[in-house]
Amino acid sequence: MDGTTNKELYFPQIELLEEFVEGYPNATFVLPFRSMDRWYHSISNWPPSDNVYHLKLKDRLQMANITGLPSWKGDSLQTFSDFFCGHVQRVREIVPPHRLVEIDIEDPITSSRMADIFDLDEECWGQAVNVNAKLHPELNQTKGGPIEWFIRGKIMLRGKNG
Image (cartoon, rainbow, N blue to C red; front, side, top):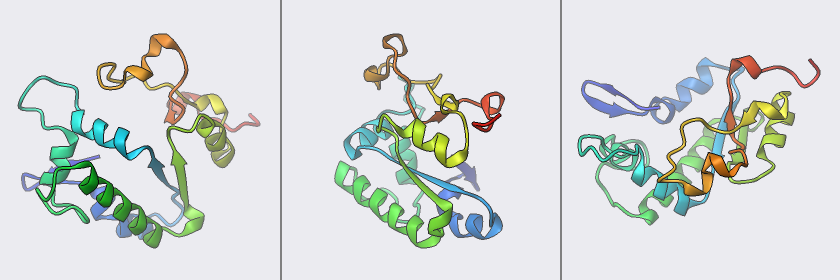
């Protein structure tokens, strides 16, 4: 999630983390993990557009001058890995442990774990509709195999017991 305030990029989930934790005392926070190489590749190529006016997520993150990533400082896998590790440490310091769920989106049993944690049918966690096949050919939907970490929508949200 990113947006603009006063024509500047803004990531409220990072900059307002303390306010979210305090303002939503019953909320559960989900912190996804994946390989740093794959994450860096993804943010360096998203959105999938040949239009020079569409900034990649990596550039938007750099422009935003967000906590832990000073604007336009570094442009490497190491810089973004350091940022991500710092972000994880910050989240763990701010969000109470009983309200934080950490998931590895590349783990094949993530959907089962999420179903158990949130009392949802495992089928609620399934394949994404908007996957960039050029960026992630390994997620080609014609090959089968769900992307285990996307929630499919409110229609399928129901407890495992009915």
